[in-house]
Image 1: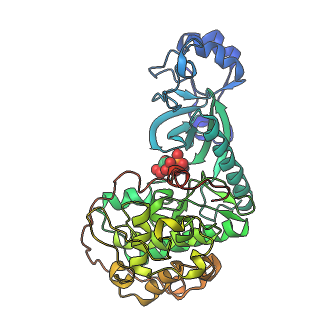
Image 2: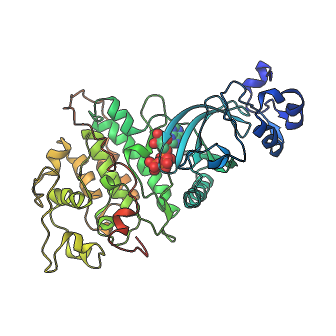
Image 3: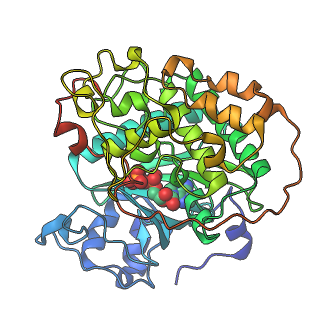
Length: 423
Ligand SMILES: Nc1ncnc2c1ncn2[C@@H]1O[C@H](COP(=O)(O)OP(=O)(O)OP(=O)(O)O)[C@@H](O)[C@H]1O
């Protein structure tokens, strides 16, 4: 057994480790044959995963010596080690980029979240771009006050890029689901909005567009559920160096993205408006059945888009015929989407004029007319005093878990229609 004196376990300064040479001499029986070779690449060893039902890896096995699934996901084993330092406790998330594991760091004894990136070249490159952005943000947010998820470090393990983060709480979509999709009180939404704007202010200052803001990427950062942090910079980019691929998740996708008109910082403000509305009502504001219907939902509330937005839009023919008339958009139930037929106030289920005005100023068709994070921070709704929430029960909304709508836009939507030099 590797023994750790209690006093040492508690300290984050000093921690107990073994040299790999000692481990091989005294604890060899806890390691698989694969690990006995692998451990030689690690000078210091904090955890062996001796209680885990380990995979017997072998260079002769396909899919990364038997450690990966056929899709390149790491086959994690509870209680096993990662890089002879972290103990895997549970899987807490899974996405296009890989899986997120809750782990105990046996060097510091802290709980951490490790994103194990899929073993795939293009995904690895995307993840490295995320690391670059997280690194830049970490340096600019040394006091950890900008409500941005902080990366602790990144390293490679068994051909997987691993990114270690501070461990946060549940995401807002999960919290809403657990609460029967009832949504949050206005004052709680206001608190979240302040946190999100603080994040967006820093992003804007540093020239970074998040590109995938949605309730799933906003995590509780305190026990009382009063504060949140933004995660998942996997689709983010520097404004100067925009990515080629299509971005944003459909429900939160701005009109300029739907039209392939080019994008900048305002796409995040559009998503913010959609998110805050959803956080209050419990259901997505623009709940399109597909890409065309998404645009239809937006038009139901905002009316037809202005000419300036349509000019130069590369996906115009999706929504307009050759004579310039709007095509009929019919949802999955056969209902025709009529531009201007819905009222934002009733969709938001609110009489709070400031809240309504705030959302309206996020949801302008023209990106340049949307509030900037700086302006939004000065808005009367944000500046207003917080009031104690009245417990007004809201009706339960239907479940929104249908696949596709809540995940990052995949290239198929665009590539089917258009080749994308810039999205
Ligand atoms: N630091 C963290 N603390 C707690 N949970 C986390 C943390 N980071 C990520 N998660 C959980 O893991 C999930 C997936 O993380 P993330 O969104 O970064 O991965 P992804 O592969 O980029 O996902 P997607 O395909 O949805 O973009 C999150 O929704 C969240 O539930």
